Each structure stands twice: as C-alpha cells, then as structure tokens.
Image 1 (cartoon, one colour):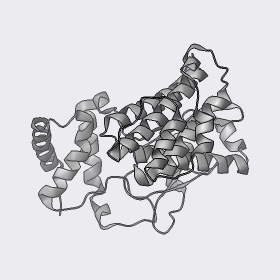
Image 2 (cartoon, helix red, strand yellow):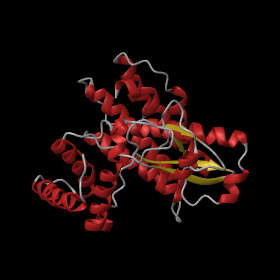
Image 3 (cartoon, one colour):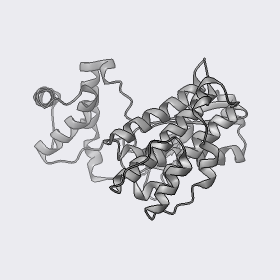
Image 4 (spheres, helix red, strand yellow):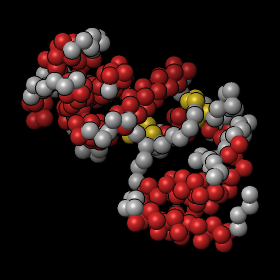
Length: 291
C-alpha cells in the first residue's frame, strides 16, 4: 500500500481535527494519530524506529510513522514537549549525584550499557533492540563515561533497572489520587537533590511521603481505612494484618524520618537522601504484585 505526501497531509488534517474535538491533549496526538491512521487503513504502524537486525511486519510502514511525527512537530513544536517517560532516578557516581531521565519505551527493549557504542550500534538480542542506558544520563562527560569501571557499570545497570521497574509500576496505577501525589513526591525527592539549592532533608522527607502514600493506597485498595500517620512501621503492620507479609523492615528503617527533618532539625547528607530514595523504589519493586 502506497501513500503520497499529499494524501498523508489530508489524512492528518482530518485526524487532528477529530482529535481536537475529542479533546485529546496536544502532547498525546502523535501517538493517537498513528493509531487512528492504522485503524483507517487496517495496517500496523511501528511506534519506534526499527533497529538493525530486528524484524516486524510493520517495519515497512516506518516512513509513515516518521511522517506523522514530523507533521505534528512542525504543527505544534514546543507544545509537544511534555515528558511522557515514567520519571527520573537519582544515583551517586564517584561521590556526585546524577540521574537517569527515563524515556518512554514502547514495545520490547533490553537494557545494556556500553562505554563506546550508542543504542543504534548495539547488536539486538534475540531480535530485540538493546538500549544503552548511558543515553538516559543527561550531560555526563565523555571522560567520566569512558573511565567507568566494570563495578560501576553494573551498579548503574542495576540502579537503572530498579528505577524503571518501580516507576513504571506506579504509572500503571497513576489514575489514583494517592499514587498521583506519590509520583510527584518522587519527582520532588530528585529535584531537592539535583537543585542548585539542594536540600537533602526535604528529599528524604519526599521519599517518606511517596512511600507512605503507596502503603496507604494498598491498604485502601483492600477496602480498609488507613491511619493518618507518617510512621511507616504502623502502616507496614497494617499491611501485614491484611495478609501482605513482604519484608520491608530494612527499607523502612532507611526511609523513616520525622516531620522536623523539613526544618533542618535532623542531619541528612547526600548519601542519606539517595539511600532513602532507592529504598522507596525497593518498596515499590517488592510490592508490585499488589499495586
């Protein structure tokens, strides 16, 4: 099936008008447009660029997906610039804080790490594209990247995997108000570390707040009322009473803090803040099956 640029222009004008009437937000229109185009012509469009060595029957229509993406980019420009990924994950590398800024992954991907090669240059594994996680670290100097040790590479890969697994699990239940605010707390925990006016106490408090809301969400989802408390051990005890006996004692001991931490009344350093953030991610990871 062949499509001329003129025909694509006409189709996209019609689809964009339809999506506007449907009140589809601008940032969501390119993906919705691809879906509507697929339905109209009964073809399957690839969402991401085909990688060398991989195959899917939809790949022959990649030029159409590319045309759609470019059409909306020219039409709406910066108004498309909404972050669609699951979030960010902060980590320490040689004593300094950095963060992964996760992109939106569509379809199957494997995650790898390479000092020398880009994702496009990495060989697929069993026909599945490999994403080089270095590409998620913003402004990482090439000298630091090239000098990372094998132990550091493994730490980065483990941290990337933990973060994307946990944050994606939250996104899947993000229609709930408690989870929406928990996601905002995770974002705040990173911002309070990475800001030029960093506040490690507020970061740890944000990690506690996100964990607290996740535990309360699970309790609520079991048709129970949760206590209005910032004490994670009380909420954890409530969870265990509902038959959820996942061991969270280590994570809670790292995250727990008092409200006074917001006012600088508890000493918190960079390592403490990042440890609390990672412990909060581990709580999600351990509780994924009951979210």
